[in-house]
Length: 364
Image (cartoon, rainbow, N blue to C red; front, side, top):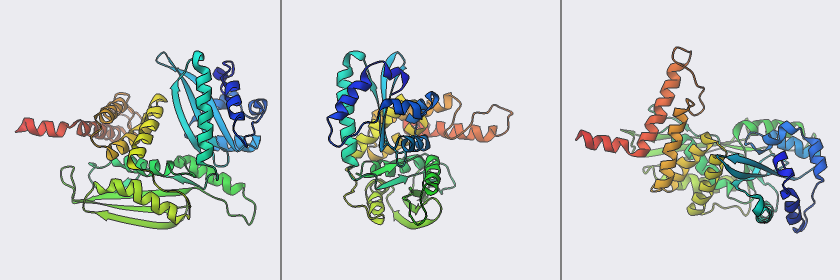
């Protein structure tokens, strides 16, 4: 636990809950304190800290970590929770919920449930770590660019809910891959992350609409392509079923993973919504936007999620920080590209708001 948690008594209560689980061996917390710098504790919670969690696990000879931190957001206290694997550094559970010292017994009981559920999902260990970078849009026009993260989150969300599978961020996965290769003895074949690299193209696009969509996915080990999967449909809406059901099934079949099957679209919607809510509380807007695009692909009529997404797009532009962009000022190098990126974000937000349909009615 972080310094904010240590004096609360919550850690001790969680340990008591964990001791109720069979086959659970707890490490001495003093060993943890000696194995990591105080400044690194907060980094353990991040999506880009897989390497740090991997290294810490090796130092401690641990199989998993449960990281806790108390933080205040707009006057409300929250408990951040991350359960992670130590063999790949993957986050297996991330949550952030309101917290009060008056209810720490209930919080400890819930955390005991988190540990139990994670152990059940990974009873046979992590069978495969999977990385799903944003898809690449092959259309010349930018009308469909906003689906790059949405399509990737559909695939990642479906795979995340399948037993034995864990996901990593792209940059961290490449670093972990090198660590795993470096730590493998001669003659051994390390289990490296599987990269699911996709691209798509809308066919005969006109005014933001299309008569079909083509998707190609390369399964790679980070360096060489293992298999290429292609799919085309005359109905762009069919892409949702392919990316959230058929493609994940093909991936686990290709890797020979038993007992793993995609969950229902409704469960995927609920899981993605919960993850987006947690990441929003953590202030990770760039990640939540892709998730909400995926959520709206699953349920286009969700007005609540669409309004939140519009607000997040507007927030990005208002803070002069387009997705994957760096803020620059007029006259500075790269300003025109920066302005174009901001404009596309505004246009995407307006499309979600139905501004294009409103404008057409006004014109009439």
